[in-house]
Image (tube, rainbow, N blue to C red):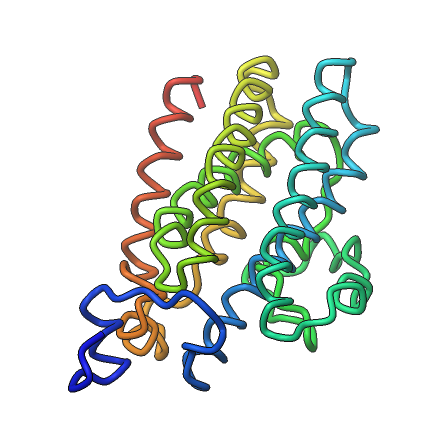
Length: 246
């Protein structure tokens, strides 16, 4: 980095930071917030899929749900290890919340976060059966795939490397969901689950005019707006559902 270029200019031009010692305080705060949101969401997702294992109608479906449960927890651990480089106590963090806790089923889309719990709002709703679990996995799996296009490009190099390793497995989770949805076929239960989960997953992309987006973009922690990401997800969902007769 040029001696005459400040850190924000460096990041805005695509610069990459490589170690905690290179990270200024404001950037560190935003980076930790991003990582906490991912870790909390993965831990909550893992807890939710653990409960869904017993909804599975057969051995292959149980294996798929078990695999997602395991890998979501592993992904959380990988990112939490990066947080540990900044001083986070991993053991204390893992035990900081009841990751299986859920709001009432009829809670409106876009729930606010609980104190200190940075999970995406979609992981605050309960899953009620196998069709419900499969639909939620499809919709959120596609959303995660879209969000990975941002995460794999973050300007903190060690974190970007972790996300690039995680991304193919997250894509496989969505693919497993699509396989399960194809087996279920069009049904009242599937359509009801789609009506329930689609607005809740959409809300997880955040507000249309995020007041923090410009700062995150200058820091190289975001590239596309919430609206752009949500529209990309909506197009993918519509394409997949149409192919399945839904």
